[in-house]
Length: 268
Image (cartoon, rainbow, N blue to C red):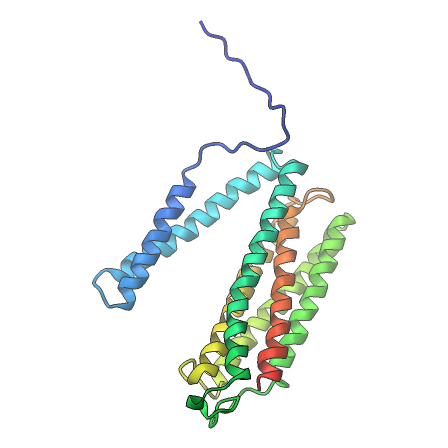
């Protein structure tokens, strides 16, 4: 009989168990891509393949992150060294997002600083009514910057061991985020131009639309953190999930500030 010997790790890192979720997520992404192309070109079955890809990605996101939360909160695998790696990964992810928005700002400022004859040689393009920055955009700026302050308040409350104060600050943050999204939708509904109205419309809606999408992602991120805070997943020393959400939210704040100053105010 061969005796079973339990091997003890002599390093602080987490060697993850074999998981089916990477390959399932890859299949979902493939279905999403092919289904999207087929749907946009009116191929039969494109909509069904697209829906399957979306549902697969959402399912994997929920299950995979559930596993990571279990490993961190209940199995103790996220040591300080593992958390340092996660922090570095989150920083690199935010840097990649900065590059993503940099492309939209490059397109906007290139077109605005050297307007071509097709749009009348002026900026904004001739005959185009633009959105005043002193209405909903200014209100949304106040809401989003205020949410940045309240999420910092929540972070300091968690570090200080003040659970109920952290919950209150996080609920206020989520309220500001939801109002921001609602007002952004109202702005789109009332906009005097569309995405097809010259380069101004395309760059405006691409930049602000993707920012709105990131606000929705950040709102979901913070909502999950609110649930985890309620069920005592966070401690004063171990709360990287919330820390990552707060970093992401501050990134969203900074991008909006550049959008407001560059596109809404200066660009108009």
